[in-house]
Length: 275
Image (tube, rainbow, N blue to C red; front, top):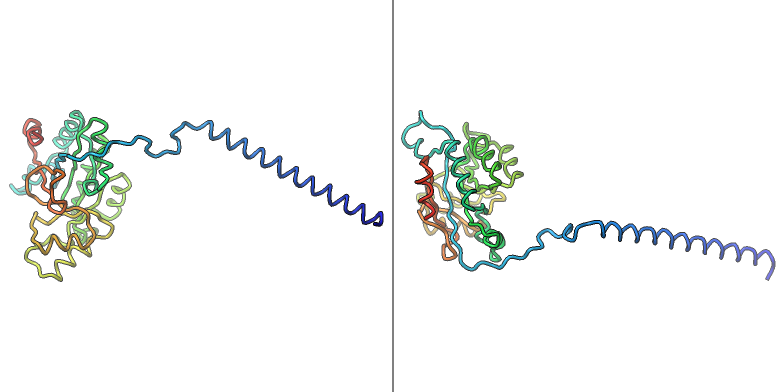
């Protein structure tokens, strides 16, 4: 072997050793930094929900039914009956908070694992669902700030054809902001018709086209029949509410859930709803 070839081989070997050494050094620095970073983090830093709550088998969930959250002194009797003033609503939310109620979303009742329900009961609290029918503007201007004040969520049923097109109803930007704030948005059909008086095609359009990404549904004026219930199920909703009075339990039909109508009443009257 010539001296020149030998020199080249030696140079290649030296360069290879330098490259390997550099790789080892870089890898060593990287692994030590990764270990240090991991050690600096709390044990639950990357665990979303470390606590496992025992799955509840039996439950009672009052589903409250609101419409307007507004002052309605100058409204007719129907308008007043459908309205709760912001002050009264605030007091009702305060009462719920002070009496250990925690809000869940309506879709949580359809969860077979009952994760939200189990968490509420596991923390020694009582579940409640707050629903708001029709999608009025005051849901955004009056209800939302109060819900956020008490760290509550609500389920808002939207008449989708009224969005952006009818005065007094929520705009899409308001709905989007409410979603970001953790509110649940459900369907209240396209135009709020009596579903029991519609033929199959029109009833289907009202229920299907208004769905978008909603998981929950509210029968307009609480009116339904076998056809409407079947369409709601086939559209992909997981739960639906009526205007029948009562408290939801594990035995309730998820597509015919009862609610408690809430009016502008004293706290004493409000509290009796939960007895």
